[in-house]
Length: 361
Length: 266
Image 1: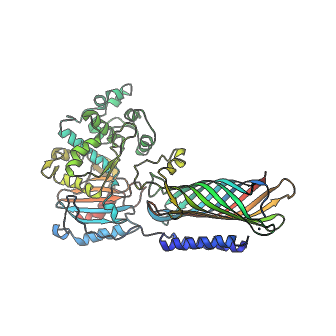
Image 2: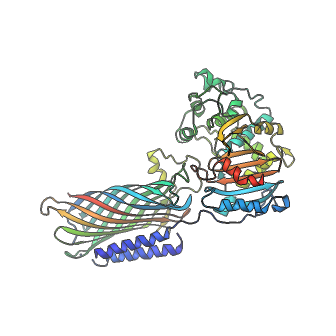
Image 3: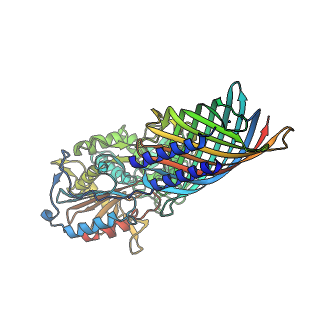
């Protein structure tokens, strides 16, 4: 009996082991965009002068299980038309929102520009002392000297790295989250050194809320997503004070992310309406500082106001491999969405993405 | 796991149960408390994040009380297990399992020197938590279950000091908690202990064995030391555990453990 029971267990384990073999990570689900009532005009790549062969080569790379491992989908827009769209894990990824991670920062810059267009923030020299007098009271005086321009270029000097920020701000509770950020020590004088962090755009979110009386999400809804017809999106708020999470809290559908790219291509115009001024877009995408990320050749990637300057244009980049690439000269927008919380999978860096799509640029 | 695989697994489980209990006969007398350690292999997969299985070694600890109460056996215990897992690309993952179970098994067949059988209901609270750090470093994935199951225990003395015990347990009805398909970053408070008890049981849905499965099979060879005196004993056992669900996406845990336990008769 002992032998029989043992054999039954071994047999059971072998049977089950054969059932739990891995499934493919990716599938060829096609590349032809489906017409939907979402405002996008669909066209073929050939009709806008894009090489189908080049797109096929990109698709072949995306379908590899060892390359762009976390990638969920990619879209290409040319001359205002959606010409190529592929999803690798599930066709449903087209219709659901995805966490775009630090692309959120780039959207924050757009919302900030829309606020400035409306007369808020007359100068980027405004500082934290002017914006948050109560919160900086009693702190190191240098905390009151951080300007909006420094916040927009990741040079606040506040020592609050992203791992700590995400853990401390969104796992633990604080009576006054804004004060909590400002209480962090300084790693450098304001404006002295670029250091990529979520704390800086979060202070921009607080500035938007303080000056306009509305959360950044409410402003985005009214000034940006509303005009673009973007309705189905999520934007995380701080549980303690309801402030919009400006560094990485936005969740968007892929086609809606592409709309933001098209807005930039169209110089801030959408269906005849000015959503963001072209003057702000120029300032936002102009390189103001060198980031601490390196390009393919090992050089620091130039950084505007939460946008990266890349060959041919500018890009938003979020953790895991979320990209929004805008190439004004070619009237080209490329979007990639990916698993958002991955740790260093292939395809999750901007230089890798730029190398992949280089043929189209 | 496809329907064909599920059918094969179900058939195999029935066969294993049948072969383990078809011969049935002496109740372990008295009450015993045991503490054990187990080592094994665990495989886990959750298609909510990635359709890849991760496999690796597991180490567990448990305590169990079994005693004759009225016409049956009261069988209760706790267990905690940790596992280090790797997928095919050697991406590391980690997994914990913790469980509490309480079963009362009326003795239906009691034949000294042959197989005996006790069969009855079991209340189980068990949780598998999986961290697939390479694929998602901000959230955990889990199967949190609280259910009423059916438990069967068969035993037979092999000599004056040796006894073979077999146990099978399957869920019938209960609540299952799975991660939501959509979560904000850091929504799971991974650094807080309460998450592993409350967080992994939130938004549980009622279901039956047709919706999700929790199956446990055990075979223990027990030896009583110093018979006649206040008894102590130890046992060596083999355990297989399977947990499967298909909502909101397929997920699966399978483990095979070898267990050593030391028991004190109370």
